[in-house]
Image 1 (tube, rainbow over the protein chains, first blue to last red):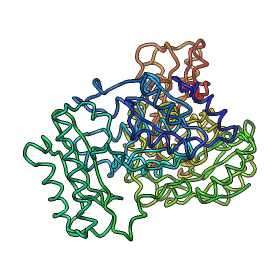
Image 2 (tube, rainbow over the protein chains, first blue to last red):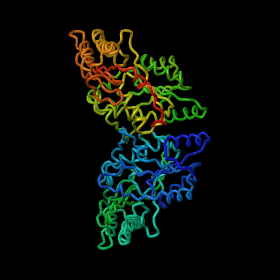
Image 3 (cartoon, rainbow over the protein chains, first blue to last red):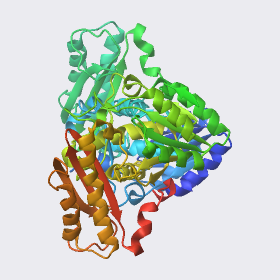
Image 4 (cartoon, rainbow over the protein chains, first blue to last red):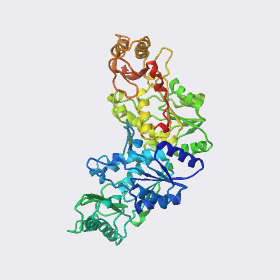
Length: 300
Length: 300
C-alpha cells in the first residue's frame, strides 16, 4: 500500500495506473476507521483494480461549535486497517494541500441539502459537496463508495455528480451495525458506557419501525410513533431528538399519510454531547430497486 | 468534423480519442462565432490532436432582462467556421441536455466574481463557473482556451480550476480586434452603424491609456483620465460608462496611486442598448510573464 500526501504525487501515481487500464475505486473518509469504512474499501477492492482511500478531516463541513478540533484520529491504526481491507493507495493530504491560500470556489448543493441535517448544520453539505468534488477531480476514480448511514450525503453527492457531469459512478453501501444494532460511526468513540447503552435506542426505534413496516404497517404517523417511543423512552432513550422524519428517499420531501413509495426514516439525536444519525430505507416491494441503482455518467 | 448533440455520444467519441492517446483541446463558446473564437480554435488545433468546440447559449449566466432570448445565432455559418479553423468535434447540446429536470447544484465562485461585471450581473459568474465546470467534466480536455476579452471570466475560471482541482490546463489567448480596434464580440452584431462608430471609443480610450503607460505614465488617476476622456467624448463616446477601473490583474483589487505590478484596465459600457466590455493589460516589464502562465493541475 502506497501512502501519498501531495496531490501532485497522487496524480502521477494514478496516471500510471490508469495508463495500464486499471479500474480505480475511491473511498473518501475522515479517518478513525471502522467496519463501515471496511465494507466500502472491501467492496471497492472487489470491484476495482486499485483502491484509493483518503483520510481528510474536512474543515469546511464543520460548523462553528461542532467537533472539528476533537474529531477522533488514529492514523497508525487506520493504516493497518486499510492494508487489511485491500486498499492500494492511502491519500493523506493536510488542510493546506486541499485548501491553499486564496481558495474561494465552492460547490453549492440545492434543495436536497436543505432538510434533515441541512436544517441544523448550515453549510455542512456545501463543505461536503466541495471536498468530494475536489477529491473526485484529484483521484478521477471509476467508482466511488459511500455508506448509507449518511443517507442525505449520498443523495447530495449523487445529485452533484449528475448536475456537474462528474465522470464517476457513485455506489452506496448498506449501513454496517454493531452486533447490538448501533450504526458504526467514528463518533461512537465519544460515548461513555452509559451513553452507549442509550444510543442503542436509535437503531432500536428505527428497526422497530422497519419490522412494523414489513408486517404491513403503512401509516406514516404510526411508523414515526413506533420509532419515537423507543427513542424517547425515559432513562433508556436519547437526550435530545433533533429530528425524526419519514421522507421520500429520492427527493427527501416529507411524506405524509401512507407510505406508497420508497421512503427513508431518518434520525438525528444527541446522546450526551454526541450527535448521532441513522436511518432505514422502507421500500414497498415494487419499488425496492430504486436505491440500488448506480448512477453512471451516461445517465447524466 | 463530427457534430454531436448528446453528452453520452460525446463521451463515447472522446473516450475513443483518448484511448488512442490523443491530446484534446476544448473551446467553449456561445456561438455566433468571430475571429476571436477563431484564434482560440486555431490555437487549440495547433497544440492538440483533437479540438472540441461547444456552442451553448448558457441560460444560467444571463440575468433577468438581459439578452438571452435575442442572443444572436447562426449555426450554419458557425459550423463552416469551425471546420475552417480546424475543429474536429462540434458539441451542440440543447438546454435540457445541460440542465435536465431536477438540476440544482451550482459552482459558486468567490471574491474574484464580485467586482467589475460581478457588481452589475449578479449570478453571472456563478452561471459561467457552473457551465464551464460541467463542460470540463463532459469533455475532459487536456487544454481549454478562453479569450482575454472576458478578462474577469478567465480569472474566475482559472481560480475554479485550481480550487476544484479540475485536471485541465487553462490557456488565455489575447483579444482579437477589428482593424479599427473594436474588440471582437458576438454582441457587436447588435450595433447600428452609428453605434458601431461610437463603440470605437472603448478601444480608443483603452489603447490611448496603454500608449501612455508604455511611454512611462504610471499614475492610476492619469491613466483612467486618458481612457475616460475618449469614452465620454460628446457625440463620439459611449451612452453609459458602467465602469472603468484599473485593477490588480491577479486579484482584481482596485489599484491606487502608481502602477507597480501587472494591472488590467477594464471597461463596461452601453452603446445604445448594447453592453460591451473590453480591457488591456498593463505590465511593468519585470512583471510581464505573469499573464502568460498556463495553470496546470500539478500547480493546484
